[in-house]
Length: 176
Image 1 (cartoon, one colour):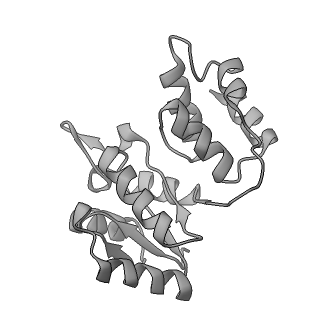
Image 2 (cartoon, one colour):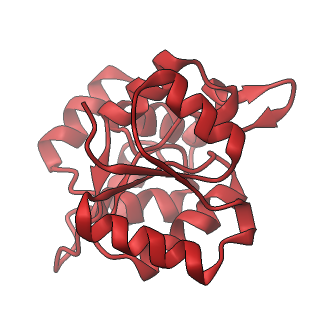
């Protein structure tokens, strides 16, 4: 059972989440994220905690960053792009209840760790950058770790900021 408030982009995303589980949901209305909504998210974070669950696209990532830069200590859930895509449209609203639950089971908390566990060398040595299938490998590894798809720079950032251990990284690599 999830006690946190789940933050999504739109009304249809909220409906999809509520089909999957009984949870409180706040909608950002996409880029229409207002000061009032940010204050509601801050209050929800103080009272129950917040899980940011935005669409796996550029707009969703920008909204996620805007919220997490303002509201500290948020948890993050990432839905794989192919599970959120229907007829070319990408969004949480297109995902099955099972996919939504699976993404929420792999929730990650952003943490400010001094010193970086992972470097560009880790990405290079594991063919996550600079190889022909680097993008596909990051996509599969992101699914396995529950941090979603990202370009190389953002993927490295997520590895270092979502509490991924070296052992967890290596175990996930074996599975892809």
